[in-house]
Image 1 (tube, rainbow, N blue to C red):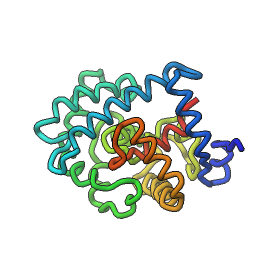
Image 2: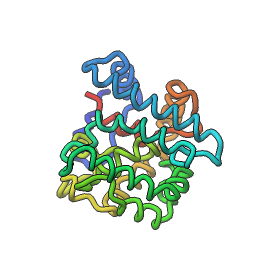
Image 3: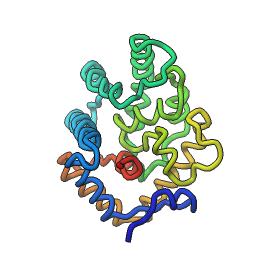
Length: 232
């Protein structure tokens, strides 16, 4: 049975079909219906494999002093992912803001990375609050935080315009500037509850992570949900 993501949004319920998700993923790997889908999977996959290689040891992470510069270079892919679109400053200045933001949240990231979407509601409030208030882009929107953290953490959706249009629970003012920390937490908390209640989806995501990235211990659950709404 085909399940409409848009109908799910109107009903305020998460609608997810495992087989359709896997079909979307397989088609995207073939560049169907658009080549950008294949590129998206490859680009995120490359970064995620790098993260896994670095963070296979508990004492090592992608923003630590040994890996920060390489991580920055790899995160330049975000420019292609339109992260810096609509910045109100030239790219060179925007990049400087971005780097300073990452430098500021290094210890916060080291704590946040210990939590998956399954344990989202256990994340200390002060960690999320400080991350949310850290400028990564000018102007700052929900996407400024979430697309970055979808890459480096993997446990949130990107919340760019297409995702916000299609996810459930996003009623009221759905503009990027309208998202508060509380609104984002509320939405991601619902995804956490949903994933915890659907063992079949969790196992499917774990299997896909093992298949694509060779590791099912750190699974990008948020990225997988994001793909469900994003893929054409």
